[in-house]
Image (cartoon, rainbow, N blue to C red; front, side):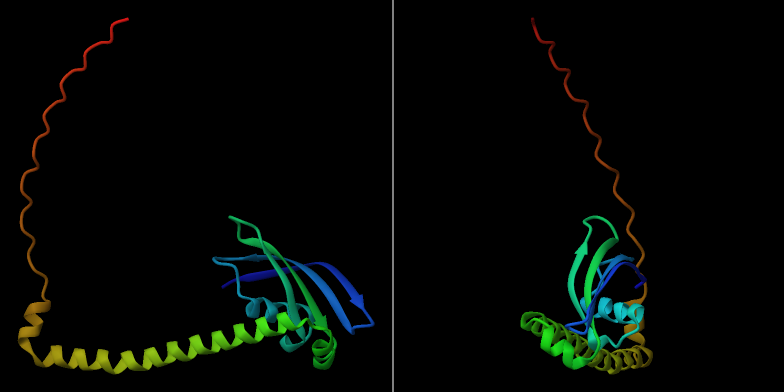
Amino acid sequence: MLMKLKEMEKKENIMLDSTRYKFSLSFDGATPSRTDISSAVAKAAGAKPAQVSIEKVYAVFGKTAGYVTAMVYGNDESKKLAEQDHLAQRIAKAEKAQADAKAKADEAKKAESPKEASKEEAKESDPEAKKADAPKPKAKDAPAEEKKPAAPKEAKKE
């Protein structure tokens, strides 16, 4: 997926050892996930993805554009101290779900590979299976029924 970020605003907070960024976001297809946006913000800000916290993602309805508000912390410890608990839980939950989905996809690919190979071997060794898989000739279409013309409507009397 192609995603572009353009920095619109940058505000430093020395007390929290962080910088708040506001980016304009343009992308192809569906709105990118928070983890994808986080890695792109980290790259744009010159930080590690672990130091980035995505606060808001505003997607413009019907368009492939939006806005992102993100905090980039100076180090991991300052992020833990300043980040809100519900955001940390959301990020951890999303990362876990993404890892689980990737693991399931890998398992499905491994499971399908032997099945496909055994099906192909069976087809090659069984001549009757080849005949069953061969394209069947299409039957000729029956002539379409003719529609009768509708009866003319009577004119309204005024």
